[in-house]
Image 1: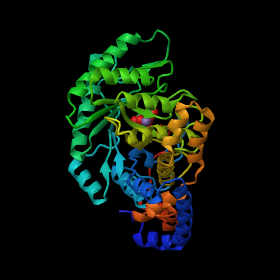
Image 2: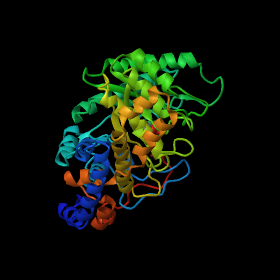
Image 3: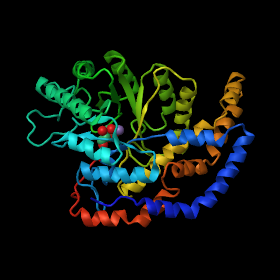
Image 4: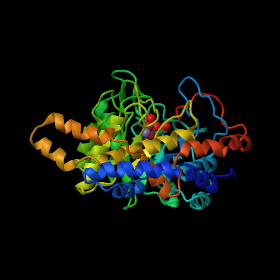
Length: 430
Ligand code: PSV
Ligand code: MN
């Protein structure tokens, strides 16, 4: 097994930076104290922040055109777990891994659970895959899965989701996330209502198999692989389906699954209000479902989403407790580095939202002082909370500068030696 990041190396590198960090932390602490914010309270909250890593994100991603495999990329779920453990060693905020089946299917799930326990990792939401056919599959998903006009294909898709619940039970997961590629490519190809009825009928059978302490998360997506219509194309169809199914069904928001410029933070607010916010797939995009690194292009949008989330947290909004997860495709970077960076980027949005002066904001909103409302949010957003993030990592045994420690560790080069012939170079979505 590839050697993980040595704790001694983390300590050694932290020792070089700790003095400077303490200075920066004290300076930020003094600034926040003037605003009646205790920095240690914020750091304690930052320490509780967790975001799951997608198992598929540890491999190099690709496009419809090509995939350029990275050095020593993981070849199976066991190696994906090793890389996930490295990400958590460094960041200390990614103790959960979200698997995708059948990509991560194993013969012995108790062995997989034992391995994750040994690595101090837990399992997040189970993702089912009915957007491609598996070798030898009897009934195709070419024309859809849960909404297919063929009962046999629908039954197969339902059964796969029920199987996923069983795998999840063995891994002590509590959530099933269902995203389907069902839809149409030509106007008139599909009867919209008929297809949605078939989808709901199938989902009801999956919902019936859900243990009482589980949630079923529905992920909407505007386009791709179907380019004219998609069965759960937006949060409207999503919440309708979730309401139709029952209280354990909630909506999942993948940031890349909306039209450009859509006000995602308002969608988040609506879902919170109606107890239907299940979770997130964080990523960033310029054009569509680009799956770029979280916060790399629109950090303010990510902050505004967290402004809604923290607002709900402070109001103790009933039924609130979404799952946070990354869902990115790393085509040109080392996936471990991108995932470490992205987890910290989302954590930064959370911390920045924590320091918004909510009392002042409410006052300005009541007075309709639009400029000061905006300035109140901008003030929190432009305050550099980096020392809080670094201190949270240090206090939990992570790295002050995770990327530098990772590069110094030589982990990737060693993985390259231990994992020869990783992946082909065909095209690939993930
Ligand atoms: C679909 O684009 C998606 O966002 C879903 O979450 C899938 O499970 C994942 O990407 C697969 O790459
Ligand atoms: Mn997603």
